[in-house]
Length: 163
Image (tube, rainbow, N blue to C red; front, side, top):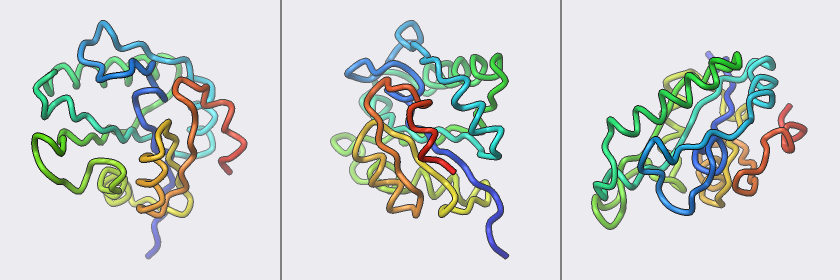
């Protein structure tokens, strides 16, 4: 039986919230970008919206899982207020200098593969929007089409690349 669902994976920093140039470690520095209409349009086309983000600052001890959960709750709630449902968050808590190698840190495809399995996704109908080459590489490795944007570029500018 073939997979039935499709998704748009979204990198977090620089895509959903403002790029700070370093880890966002405090909720006070977490500034959500206005991509509400663009993501609503994708949701209305039947795409699940999934976040896939490297969070190496956890391994470095710069912030806690609890602080990260607060940021993700704020993101989810803010989008819900605009009628957009972020279905899930996948994050890599590792950092090569602190935890060694892992399968989930982008450009490896682990985060996307978790989402594909959990939500029975068809990778060939799914996308990954990110502001780093490693996001596109992770997408390609997972069989998902990667779309590279500039940091803080509105997602609306790449909607025409998504069927």
